[in-house]
Image (cartoon, rainbow, N blue to C red; front, top):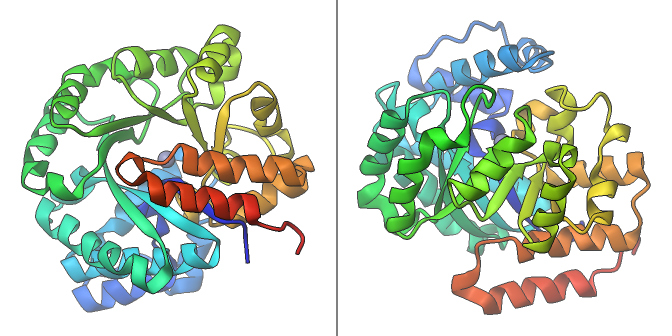
Length: 331
Ligand SMILES: [Zn+2]
């Protein structure tokens, strides 16, 4: 059994495997521009961000009904359970669905039907985080937050994703202020392709509690010191960084440097169907490529639970942390 861990950076739309895409397409009468699952799997071998985003948003056309979202989330949770995930904080992109005419409530109710059974079926506790598409307007993000109001009992926090460069965090200042007023937790993608300054801005202007990716903080030693001192978690996604060319090869990943600098680094899968692996596959990849030892792997697992939004259930966090300490690597 893999080490127990929390997954904190996972886009549910990025878990759509070719087989499920074809099954949903058939059920919903959607024609995909691929001959079969093999041809689609071939398309998943994109080589740059734009071809990834085109495929990613194009395939969402197969997600129409609440049941579709339930099946998508259930398939992820089943795989996550096999990969040692005990707690998952799942991102979804409401605007990517409402823009296609799928109501906000259909998405949330569909996802929650799977999340509600996750504890019993897979032994996984869950949280849901709605992300704003940063290449859309701040007005659109605010309207999305408005649409979320009837469902806030089911939504733990807000995030910010999609194409980073040219869309600095400050663009969403008012939206994040409103989210804070509503009692929502705040995270944001920053410092993946964008500069270290975006990480600072996400902290100072948006008040985020975790940084998604944050790789490029390393270009700013003062920022690294601050992130370590303030214990701001970073949700790293090593296989994603290779596929989207943030780094050239897995062996170049700065994870070990980040741990040595005292950063609260965690390892996650981002969009696992597209990036060549789920969370334990990411653990395996960095362990093998960087030669991480048992204590570094245990630190990563421990960090994932320390960084989780479990303040409403500290007893559960304590149980998970005890599982990490008791885990025997190589057993
Ligand atoms: Zn992401």
